[in-house]
Amino acid sequence: MEYLKAFLVGGALCLIGQLLIDKTKLTPARILVGYVTAGVILTAVGLYEPLVEWAGAGATVPLSGFGYSLAKGVEQAVLENGFLGAFMGGVTACAAGVAAAVFFALLAALISKPRNKS
Image (cartoon, rainbow, N blue to C red; front, side):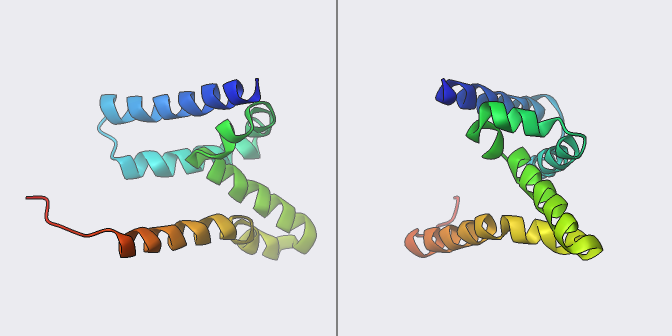
């Protein structure tokens, strides 16, 4: 049942993104930033946490989950370090994911052969 919940929520988030690409003039970059921002805002008002508890990876893997991780990291760091936690909490919470993304992007660039589109 966990897999079905994750699939439904993750699929719904992807469906919304695809509809935004197809039906609006928003660029993919603006949609991606919107997803991260929406994750932060929904976490701040307490709406994203229940979704994460219910859907698991279906809610934490998409970009809105990145915003959720940023917000939770900032929240935890502020509780531990006060005002300075607002500046370092998001970086600390997402450092492993960002490092993995950079590493695998470098690996893909070294393995693949670049060529012209024409």
